[in-house]
Structure formats: C-alpha cells, structure tokens
Image 1 (tube, rainbow, N blue to C red):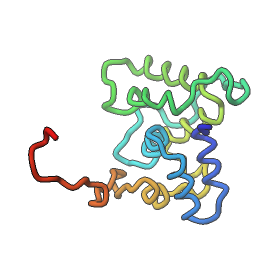
Image 2: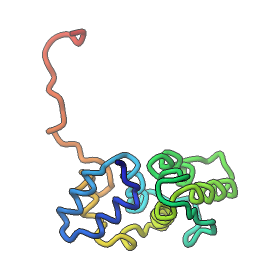
Image 3: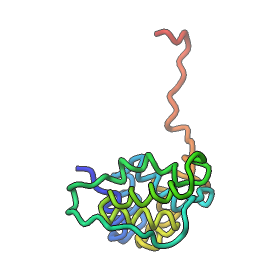
Length: 161
C-alpha cells in the first residue's frame, strides 16, 4: 500500500536515528516525495505564491476517500514555482493552488503549505538537509550525485546486438 507523503514524513519524524530516517525515505522513495521535499529545502526553488497560511477549506473526508493524492498532484507543482509556468496570471495560480489544497487530504495539504513556506523541516522533526541529502544521494544543490556504481559498462562492438 502506498502511504501518503504526510504519512511517510510522519514516520520519519517518529524514529530517533538519522539512519532510521534515511532508511524510511529510501523505502518510500518516489519522484513525488523527492519533488515535495526538494521544493522545501532547495534555496534555488522559489515558490510563486505568497508566504504564510493559505485561505482554503480543509477537506475533512476520511483518509483514503475522495481525495486527490499529493503523489499524483505533484506533477502540477511547476505551476507554482517561479519560472515554471509564466503563462498563467498570479490570480489563476493562487486559485489553482487553493483548489489543489482543497482536493488533498488535510494532512497532505499541510505538507504542501509547509513546503511552500520552506518549513517542512520545522513541521517534521528530524527531516533535515543532511537526512534528505543522504537518503536521495543529493549534493548541496539538491541534485543527484552521479557515482560510478550505477553506470553500465560499455561493451565493445556494434550497438545492434
């Protein structure tokens, strides 16, 4: 079963050691989780939305019912990042963000608001830069560090098999 991003981050905040935190992030690693975490930690990513609380109606439907998931919705996050979508008006961008939050489970909406304000590390104890860098093999720019262990050796001969 796929956990909500909020559930993964909650698990991270409950374990004690850095290694346990890293292991949980690796165990539940997926592109959406990386995207949300990176948007909070990477200082090169600027949200094109105002700081602070967002006026939206929390979705109080029980977990697992009638929600969009942040894992799915994360592919739309570029609309809310400076330089990601310059074709929509700021008003439209803010309206779309509110609509996204209202469709998510309230715990995931809270994750997204915290990420927008670059405060995930304050909301989830122990979710620190060193932890996420180690978990996802990121360098100080929050980019994947290329290492030679994942390069397939080149074989001699034509590539047509």
